[in-house]
Image (cartoon, rainbow, N blue to C red):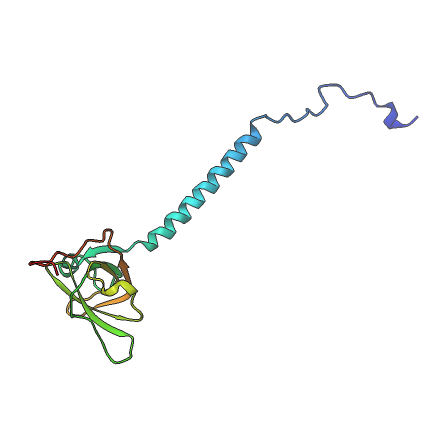
Amino acid sequence: MDQEAAKPPPSPATLPLPLHRSPLGGQVKLLVAIGLLAAALAYFAFAAFQGATVFYLTVGELLDGRAEAEKVVRVSGKLVPGSFQREGSGTLATFSLTDGVRVLPAKHDGALPDLFFNELSDIVLEGTYAAGRPFAAREVIVKCPSKYVARPAQQGPAP
């Protein structure tokens, strides 16, 4: 007879034990994976918006030195009437913004929005500023008036 056939059957103590999987093991791994994915997405969103934040100042705050020189900032104000100038058919425009008290000279090379000259519109310039030089706007944003206010009635009888 064969020697293998002559071996006694293995005892239960020498048999390998079957692996039992915990019913929660797969769920825990799934929750950990979802948590890591959510953390990664939150980090990427934070990193993207961190670089997109830009200071928003009034004309007076900018002139008081609240912005670092040559750092990109946004400044809000209204167009000073009669301050707009454009040389010939070029795209370089110079103008001034005011917050009602102080005046900021500015320049922009490019097209301007349609409502730029509306006296009720707030203008937001994004660009850089250094003391003694005009604000160098790389982008001009016009905020439409939230309310359309009727012009004050003129004194005297109606025509």
